[in-house]
Each structure stands twice: as structure tokens, then as C-alpha cells.
Amino acid sequence: MKKLLFLSIASALVLSSCGNKTSGELVGAQGKKWHPEKPYGMELIPQGSYIMGKAEQDQAYAQNAPTKTVTVRSFYMDDTEITNAEYRQFVEWVRDSIVRTKLAILADELGIGPEEGGIGDFAFNDADTTRLSEYDKYMMDNYAGMGETGYEGRALNLDEDLIWDTSEYPDEYYTEIMDSIYLPEEESYNGQRTIDVTKLKYNFKWMDIEEAARSREGRRKDFIRESTIEVYPDTTVWIRDFEYSYNEPMHNDYFWHDAYSDYPVVGVSWSQAKAFCHWRTKYKNDDQKQRGKQFVNRFRLPTEAEWEYAARGGIEGGTYPWGGPYVISDTGCYMANFKPQRGDYAADAALYTVEAKSYEPNDFNLYNMAGNVSEWTNSSFYQGSYDYASTMNPNADSNNNSRKVIRGGSWKDVAYFLQVSTRDYEYKDSARSYIGFRTVQDYMGEEDTSQ
Image (tube, rainbow, N blue to C red; front, top):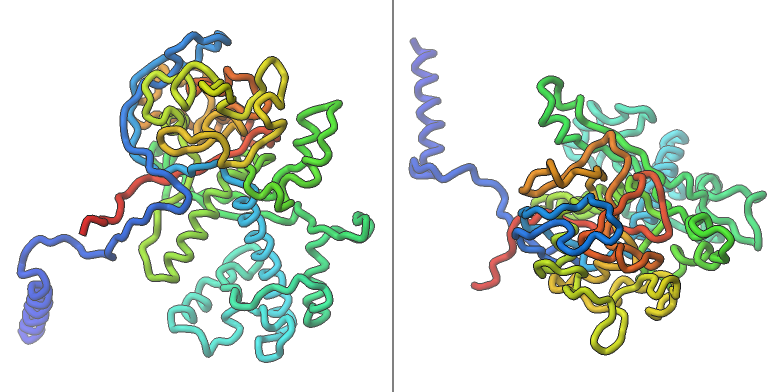
């Protein structure tokens, strides 16, 4: 009887406690205050309907883009293609993470901690257990090291700057690790040793939501995928794409030299573009977590329908992003970077690519949605996908189809491929000197600035 009485009193106290906060009203579970921010370097593409496909004559008789009215939701899109500088930020982050991991592992194996200096300055954060919270201690005891290497889940020390000047290496152990990421001496020339870019790999996990939603069986873990991608662009595309053509300067300088920082990155496969999207999401949310803010939703590649809608810039029935059927303005200037006049690459004042913010943007303030570089989309290429794809956010995608849609045409294409409705494809593991990408993010509201 006493036990029942105690439970009744406890229940009453709990209910009373809850009632004090809500006055007994249905107010909803209270989460973090959401302060939406416009993503840096992106433009809002408002939701809307448009006629997708070729309203004009299909000069190539591809017959793979019949017209249909579709509706897409609001999203943000990069105002330019991802540039060499932006992609280098990704590559350098991967490089630094690999170096820090190697340094921390060796310090752990040698039993050297921060108090001893040298390589110890780069030991795992949990090397000094006095600085760990109770949660960190619990996670370390129960989850750290559950993986192939035995070091998974252990936090790196990001406070110490890496040392790249060989004359300032702090000890022999640091020198050993740095030596391991460069090409061997016999592969160096002109007195320069370069980093072995095949070691720059980004490992990430992702959830196959579409397969999970369609499956009637299986647990969550059955749909978690893991990918390991070499992130460095294939600079040899400048030579391999054009046999019997001298393009060695582009191979040597295009990606790494500051002269090309604001030019679109190329030589990046669809798989590498997907890895970049995952990293960009992680990079942003790591900062959100540090500032105590709610996570943003993921960056991703646009669907084919989103890309075409954004390229049209709100103009119904336009042939090109600027609307009209011509590629020359009323002042006699070309309006995009492509191959005009049956092969005069330089007629538009550019032989190869141009800076990402070149020519006039379309009415959504997006640059180079026609020409410069073709762009990867998230959609798989099917000849007749327009016939069966949904009219709401259409997207024909399949992990089993390695052909991925590219859009927009490039610096080496004729005007037909610049048309907003023209479809083309490339295999997802292929890299080309004329294919780049830009990312999108789903719209979740904007900050109210009216007050």
C-alpha cells in the first residue's frame, strides 16, 4: 500500500512539474531555436513549375527530352561552378587530416604525450585524460578503436599548426611521418618533392535513403554505405582528352597555381563531386556544433530537373539561360564560353575555361549555366526517363546506372550543348577537362529581417 501511495505521489509531482511549464496546453516539444542563414556563395531558387524538355527543334534528333510540366521545391544553388580554390580547400583538409592522424598514431605507439613536445604535440586529444569530460571518457572506454585501425573515434588535436618547412621539423618522428606522404626521391625531379596524391583519400559513410524506403526488410545498418574516394583531381585529363594536342601547361598548372584559383575545377569525377558535397556538409556542421547552433541540411548535387529549372532563370521557353535563341548579344559579343564558328575556340575570347564569374548571370544570378564547363547532376541518364519520372521534383536515379547526367555544355562544345534543355551524360568514375560541378542545398526558410 505504501508503495502504491509513493508511486501516486511521484506521478503527481511529475505531472505537476510538466504542467507548470505549459499550463496544460499543447505547445509542442521545444527544440533549439532555428536561425536559418543564407549559405555562403549561394542563390535562392524559388519553388515553381516550368515546362521541362525541348520546346524548340531537336537538331540532334536525340528524342530524349519531350516536354512535360514539372514542379520543383525551393533550393539554394552555388552562384558559380566550384572553383579550383574551393576544391583545393577540400584537398588540403583531407591532406592535413591524414597527416595529423599519422602523427597521432605514431605518438600513441611511442607513448609520447603533449608534455614531452615534438610529435607529442600532435597526440590524440585523449592522451591527456585529465582534460576529458565524463562523456568523453565513457565514449573512449566503450567505443574508441572499434574499426580496422583500432584508432577510430579518437579525436585529433587541431590546435597545433602543422609544420611544412623542413628546416623546422621538431624531431625525427615528425620527419618520418612527413616523409611518408611525399613521393620517393627517385620519383622527384628539379629538386622538388611533391605529395603522393594517391594517398589523399576521403572516407565517409552515407545512408541509402531511397533503397531503405523501398525495402520491406532490413535494419538501419543494412543501408549504411561506406565510400573511400581519392580526392585529387585527375590533371592528366588535359592531355588524355585531346590526343595530338599540346596542353601540357594546363596539366602542369591549372589546378594548383594561384593564377587559376577562380577558374572552375575540372578532372573531378561524379564520385569525387559527391565526396566534396559530404565534406562540405561536415565542414559546415563541425562549425555549427562548435558555436552551439543547429545543424544545416546537407549539400548535394542538383537533380537534372533542378538544374534545368535554375538554368532557365524563370524564363519560360527560353533556349539559353539568357532566354533568346541567339548566342551573340546585341552588341556583338558572345554570351558564353563555348566553341563557336565550327571550331574557332578563341572567337569568344577564351581558348579554355574562364573565371567562374564571367559573362552575365541569368535572372537567378547564376553564372555560366551555359558553357565554360559542363556540370554533374545527381540524376542517372535514361533515354526515356521523362516519360515515367514524377512531375513533382522528378529524379531518375539508380546506384546500378553508372551513366550520370551532365548539363550546360562546355568550353569545347558547340552551341547545341549549351541549350538549357539539352541532355548529355558521362560515366560516374570518369574525369574530363570540360566537366565540373556546383552544389545545392534544400531551402528551409530565411531569417526574418523585417523586425
